[in-house]
Every structure is written in C-alpha cells, then in structure tokens.
Length: 154
Length: 154
DNA sequence: CCCGATTTAGTTGTGCACAACTAAATCGTG
DNA sequence: CACGATTTAGTTGTGCACAACTAAATCGGG
Image 1 (tube, rainbow over the protein chains, first blue to last red):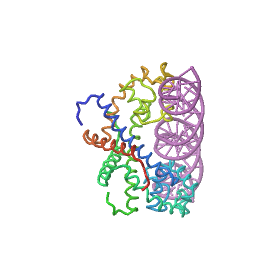
Image 2 (image 1 turned 90 degrees about the vertical axis):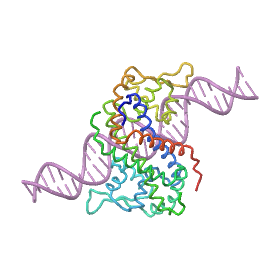
Image 3 (image 1 turned 90 degrees about the horizontal axis):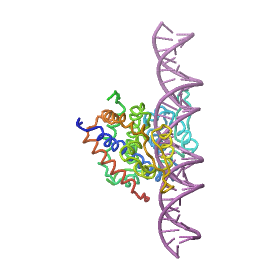
Image 4 (image 1 turned 120 degrees about the vertical axis):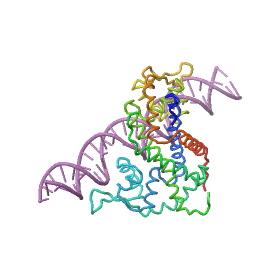
C-alpha cells in the first residue's frame, strides 16, 4: 500500500470499497427477492434450503457453520420454514442438546421449482461463468482475511 | 455461459456466488463494527456520515440516492444520529416537503477520529490498493447489471 | 461418581432493509 | 386559478444479523 495517501484520500477510497460491496449485496438481494417471490422464500431462507437440498438432514449447529449464522438468526428463520411446512425440527435422541433439521416432502419437492432460479439470476448479472468464478474467489479470500483479522490499533 | 450444465450443477454454483457475496458483506460488517465501536457509530451510520463529511448539508432525498436507501431506512437512522448529537434535521423553508440534514460541530469533529478507520480496515483485508480497485470495479458493474435487470421468466 | 466447564439452542433487544402505506407540499395543465 | 398528479418524508410491519444472555444436556478431571 502506498504510504503517501492522505487520510482524506483514504476516507474517500474507503467509502467506495465497503460501499460497493454493501450495494452489490443489496442489489443481489433485490433480484433474489423478485425471483423467489413465487417460491414463498426469502433470500436467507433460500440459502438455508440450498444447504438442506445438497446435504440433507443435519443439526442446527452444522447449518449455522455452513451459512455463517448463529442460532439467534437461525432459530426464528427455521421456525418460519417449519411453519411454511418445508422443514421439520426434532431434538436428537442421542444428544438432546442438538436439534436436527430435515426437509418435509413438500420442502424436498420445492427443489424442482427452485432449479429455475439460478439461470434467471445468472442472466440478470450478465456475467459469464469464468468471471463469476474469479469474483467468487476474490470474495472468499476477502472473507477469510476479514474473519482472521486481529484488528490491533492503527 | 455453457449450456451443458445441469440445473443441479447450477444450484451448487449459484449457492457459491450469491453466498460468497453475502458472507463477504457480513464479514466486512463485523470488522467495521469492531473498529467503529469507539466512535459510537454503526456501519450504515458511518456510511451516512462519510457522505455528509464529503458533500456537506443536503436533503434526505439526495442522501438516499447516494446511499441507495429509502426513507424507510434513513428516517430512523438519521433520528438516531440526531439523538447522538452528530447531525441536525430541518425542514427546508423553500420547499417544506424536504428535510435538510447537516452536521453539528460535534459531527464534523468526529471526522478527525474517523480518519484512522480506513487504514485499519485496509490492513484487515490484506488487499493492496490495485486489487481493491479492481474488485470495486467488478462489484459496481455487477450492481448496475442487477439494478437494470428486467427479470423476465426463463 | 460428582461437579464445574463446555456445547447447543433458544430468547431478548437493537438496528438495518425494504414493501406498502400515509400525509403534506408542490407542480403542471386545462 | 383549481385540482389531480407528483414529490418528499415519515410510519408500520416483516424479516435478517448479531450481541448478550439463559437453559439444559453433555463432557471430563479429580
């Protein structure tokens, strides 16, 4: 990093970095909201369903690790999915601390209709597969760096 | 895009794209939350202050355009900034529909302490200036594409 | 075996995002 | 000028994110 930038320059640059990410994330959310509307899912609910469709029944804990969400977010979200009849939650008999989440028949069936979603999203981005892959790689590296940052004073 | 990908492949790929962005945005939020804590600002409040520091007094409408936020989000956020003594809101005399937001002396003074924030964030990312610039360019292009998407069915 | 530490979900409270709506001021056209 | 259309903030309701906390089950060292 160039050490001759003024703090004022950095304040502007800084705005653009964090803000671009923030804006892109919300723009994605808007597009998903429209596309997911007739599935009756929100964007975070769709992410949870993706994990369940791919990996099947699992405890809340593991779902949270894959989604990077804690129980404070997942518990009410899963309750809503259960109320919608898409999943069931059951305390494990072996370890009564953990709650296993599994798809209902209806939840599993929804996968068929969800299969149309990715193409519509991909079309909306206008990005090709290679470009998306590179962007994803950078974002994942960024996430890992941010997660591991120690944030000592300047 | 290759047309020989199965819908199942796309469901997985799709998860990774939207999810990477979602995760990166939240990871950024976490880092900002820690760094901004002793300024008494949240991440979105900091974004609003950045705009005010750079462009000065302006109506809620224009603030919303720059932040891509509507009044439903901005009104309570600005109320909290006002309660914290950082901004004042006043109905315009010329057009009483619009409310002008301006920094208080305290709000303007906070800029000095905020000047330390960008370097700490930049350090946490581990990205160099050029890499950040390229990532920002891609994200902005993505946001524009998503904003302009018409979302016709497949 | 026992009791403190750990693990796992859930609850509570705060704040952001956004859709849908209301209220009031202003604009524009006949 | 009158009056409907538009603009601008604000309000309400839903859902997500996360910190801080609680409750209950399990684990493990003495």
